[in-house]
Image (tube, rainbow, N blue to C red; front, top):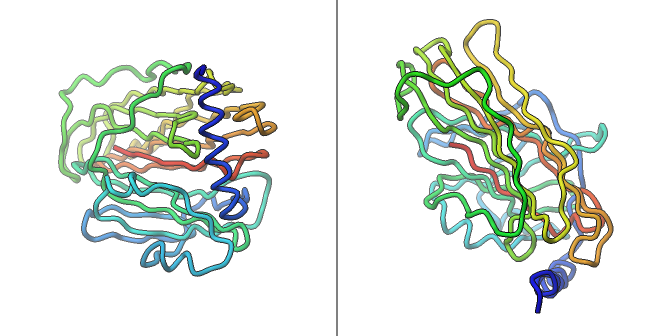
Length: 297
């Protein structure tokens, strides 16, 4: 059995399970200004956006038409988990829920997992927590692309530093993955930033990105490129990528399926904190089969 044939058989079986649960996520626009903030006191990070914190999946699952993804193994590799319902916004074109994770300096990877969706209430349930395992390995049989570093390299030594003190961070990143029903990464975008700060101002930075798509099963990149912004106050900047991937015949059963990243952004500050800024969604006839995960370091 070839790799493509085997992939089709596994995905078809998973599709039948998904279809038996319910219909799928509805793309919806989201705010460009973060209107709410939830402080999770144990790890010390913040979740910002139009959302509501709830007790867990059981509470979210009480509503009819809720569809859960198979993410138990992902949740088992997270601690200090909080659950958030992301509310759909009035539609203004195609978009996805837009939210942010604010991470103090010195904290490890904060992971966000899409746990469930409800097309009737137009919401998603996401879990946010500290990752206890490394980022997933890149699957074989795919293609990669990258944008080179901008603004030059950082000259000072990297390493963890406390907020409100001078320091540097080498290799901070925001990485967003889209998974198929059997847990294979079909594409991802990773924005990488090195920067130094003095407690108030960003003193230097460089940024790059890395992008992947599972070309062996039909995915290809439509566009992708790095953009940088540095504030006139010298207190913060952002490196982000806008991207789109397409599979014209996903699993040999569906018509065109698209994933969007607008933006996949890493915001960095003069006090050593950073923010993952992301807006990602999926469209097409197989939109209900894919779910996402996001890491920020």
